[in-house]
Image 1 (cartoon, rainbow, N blue to C red):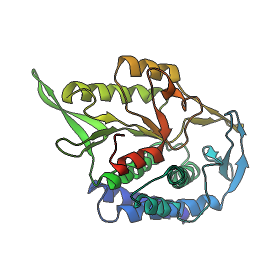
Image 2 (cartoon, helix red, strand yellow):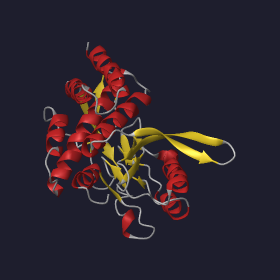
Image 3 (cartoon, rainbow, N blue to C red):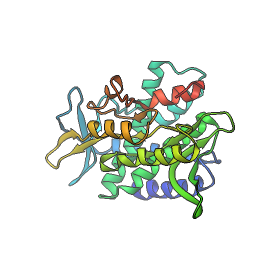
Image 4 (cartoon, rainbow, N blue to C red):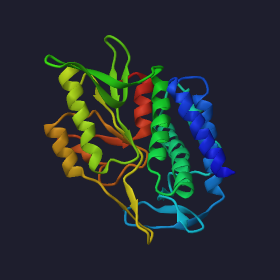
Length: 288
């Protein structure tokens, strides 16, 4: 029954988001989906993992011979309805650092519960967790900006006319106002170059950094079958991309990788920060 309830709610959510992230029912369906996922995984067993990441500990949910992805112990909360708590916090005019951190943990708890549930219910399914993560982030940013995103952008070419570039989430707040390019992925791995490649296209068509690049990611953890957790990051490649391809404004994580957290301190200043910091700056109307 748990599998059917979770997957049925997911199908309803897909239909709701076709009408827009701010459409009636999207927030309730996200809350329902995360609530059911949390109830499912909290009834499962937990296995402590061997963390090779300095200062972090992880566990995974288990059900029979099936295991979930790694879950950050410090970020995960069993508190009921963390998604609704995160939404309530976003209604505040100010988001101080402690509230930003709480929002990051609450969103992480909700998203990782769903991802873990799918790991156990549909082993090998990477698309569904990624889709719901995009819905969740799309909803949060849309709510903060009161603006629906575009997911294709017109690209002009003198020889072949106008082409439509598929993108993740692009927010255009109107003339004279900020515009945001927000790729959303559960992890970057070898695909991270696409963040900078799409930014380069937008820079070339619309003007340098007219759209601020603000990728959002879940984590960069990898868990072996034997239960060893590592983080796979490419900081040197990211520096090359930031120097020679395009400039991203900042990169947001729910579980910020240790190898990336200080990347913004030296040239070429790839700023990596928790999701709550982005939601705070967007909420306050300051430059992200």
